[in-house]
Length: 359
Image (cartoon, rainbow, N blue to C red; front, side, top):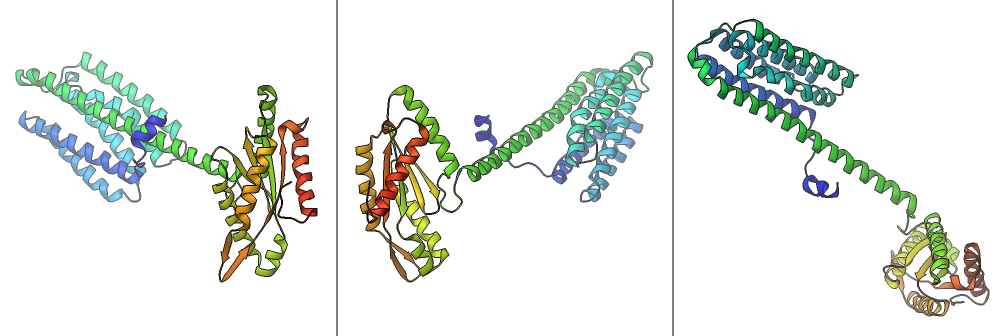
């Protein structure tokens, strides 16, 4: 499916009006060809009928903006009448009955395009009618001789049959391509919506980092895996010092800008395969894979120093913030829940010891 998406990802679904324009143009061209055939072979009734059909299709363009369903029924009826007249006048050997086959996908697709009620039931009924009419044409051709017969018609019959076969296959191909395009377009739309919902469900809307629920689930799975692999990972819980003072002094909009700035800084100061989330309020959590507690403290100290030296600009103000860090490793605890408790305990030890430290 991914390869298919790449091939036609820039193709947009045709509008219903455009589909019917193509349908009218296609039918008009076919009838012009048949009218020429009838004129050359002096089949006057067929010539007059095709001239009338061309006029009907051209007049149908006036209905494009309001009455697409009426255009469909006009076209369906005209194709049926034309095929029967061809069978009666020149016989079944020219392949005009194949048009009934093209009516089947056309009915399903165009009725769906106009969003008519019970379109599936209606299209299925029309498909049955098309089959019965196709069978009737065959039976008629076996019992009755055509009105127009000549050596010339006998000679060109195989060629006209091939032309009608090509016309039928062209119609089937066209509706198959439409089906493919719209199926892929629907898949892409659904995939995009699912990605949006997944992003909403898994990330913090302000910072764009993972949210607490997603991170907690990831830590739980990683903890279970490390119990089997005998490896370690570490958690760093960090909290902005005196964040309430920032909000009280500069306002909550400034507080939001500080949170976003800290998020960007933390993203640049961690490795690409580490996980970072907004744990809640002004707290952030960093998951360091394959890192023991001592190495994690070294990384946390480096992050602490960088953040303490960073200026955050808001309007005309320059704001300096510090953060306190609590570090714990999966190798220090006996359970998944204890890992969070230990990191949180060390964070508050740091808060109580003067802040802007790593414990």
